[in-house]
Amino acid sequence: MPSRRKQVGLLVLSLLLVFSGSALAHWGQTAGGEIDVRQVEIETDDGGTIDGYLYVPDGVSADDPAPGVLAIHGYINSKETQSSFAIEYARRGHVVLAIDQPGHGYSDPPAFANGWGGPPALEYLADHELVDEDNIGLEGHSMGGWAAVSAAAEHPNSYESIVLVGSSTGSAGAPEGNETFPRNLGVVFADYDEFHWLMWGSAAGPATPESEKLQSVFGTEDGIDEGKVYGSIDDGTARALYTPRTTHPGAHHTPSAVSDTVGWTQQTLEGADEEPGDHVWYWKEIGTAIALLGGFLFLVPAGSVLTGREPFADATRTVPDAVTERDRGWYVAALLAAVIPVVLYYPTMLIGSGSVPVTPVTPQGETNGIVLWALANVVVIAGLFGLWHRDTGRSLFDERYGLDLGDGIRTIAKSLAVAVGAVGGLYVLLWIVDTLFMTDFRAWVLGLKLMSAVHARIFVTYLPAFLAFFVALGVLLHGRLRTPETTRSLPRAMATNAVILTGGFALLLVIQYGTLFATGALAIPITALQTIIAFQFLALLPVIAVVSTYFFHRTGRIWTGAFVNALLITWLIVASQATHYAF
Image 1 (cartoon, rainbow, N blue to C red):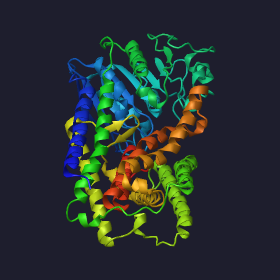
Image 2 (image 1 turned 180 degrees about the vertical axis):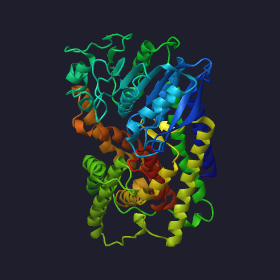
Image 3 (image 1 turned 180 degrees about the horizontal axis):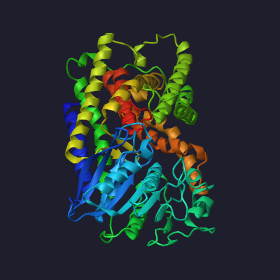
Image 4 (image 1 turned 60 degrees about the vertical axis):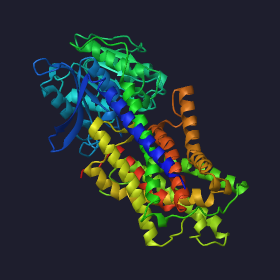
């Protein structure tokens, strides 16, 4: 049992990380108080709303309006991923509107509606009293670029320039581009962009300057020179290409890509301040990452306190003896546990997101893929565990598996109550941070956000599938794979289980990105989206392993850890994914 002093120490450390990180993130987001960040809502013609942040520099007023920039994130992202651009635009004197696309963040579903949200957002920005309506730029990353192009096509007189970051014209139904449309086009396309084939039809990222599609938009039949301005800014026909050495999701977290993006808008709009020689946006990213780490850590002391207090203490017991040794059979089982989830990953993700119908019960395409992957793993774990268990002569509810029910429904109910208390405490903590600092818990492509009412409804429908997965995972880790060594040592158990869960995905990403950096294309290019999502798996699986292992050692059963992981991961996924069903 952890001592009370350790519990208090971990709790204090987690809170220190959460609030110091969030304070740093707020400082970065407001550039030390030079930018006022306001939450806004935009009404759409179909009666929905689009949520956004308005970044207003000091000194801007209705009597002294500033140039405006509309900044739009990509698929299964939210307005927070535009922070790097929005902060640096605002530091240079622009009023910036960063929106949640329809079906993303806190904007009403379905995803892809209203021109991906671009046209109504541009209308709002152009009509805002703080914005010079004759001096507006557009910026969009990935699918956000299609939203920006749609806004430009629908409101051709409401903008002066556009920057497409990892994006293109004429893709997925976005308007086609040519020598004069969009007006004053900047393209920031990474050397190692995973979507080169989708955006510009090139065989590899570095070959994009030779793309016929891109050349036709630039009005040339030759390879495009990076940084060269084609056409005329005054005539609105200017074009320029920038190719920072990063990846598709790295484009909004790379200083050179941010500088290229903001620099093009500086060239093509009037009235903004000179570009400063430094960036501050990364302090916001560092701060939210620290807060995310603190939030995950918070679950340990919160759960420890609850399991050690009445009426929950009698739902715990000492850790039972292990049922296996670290022999050849254990290594085979551990290898299967690491490899099979990766083998299942692409097929289930592609089938789940592409073939499972969008309904009120299954309203999120990519979440459907993750759920199908999780359930496929449940079937495999059950089958392999059943084969191993069949010859042991033990009861399935042998206490050494962690599946025993103790006092029956009372033990399960108390285990669930502990999980609700720990995860609920984390939710309250995030609500406080959002209220005080207007930031969330986030690290690159992984974000933990508060849920909207729509998210809460979706959470309930997906929770049972994730709970089944985490129960099966608990049986695998703490029944089949737990050895006497990992029973005696909690740190060793955490490390072992984290390696087992993440090893296969780490190898997958090494193969995919090793190939990308060597050849300019992923080993399986069509899986670009799922490969980027795999980074979140790589980050979350160690957390899942630590949570499951800690609560097993704390309670002697798998139930509390399974409940905590199910609540946490369902919340995280549902709040961060796109909703495709119009509730």
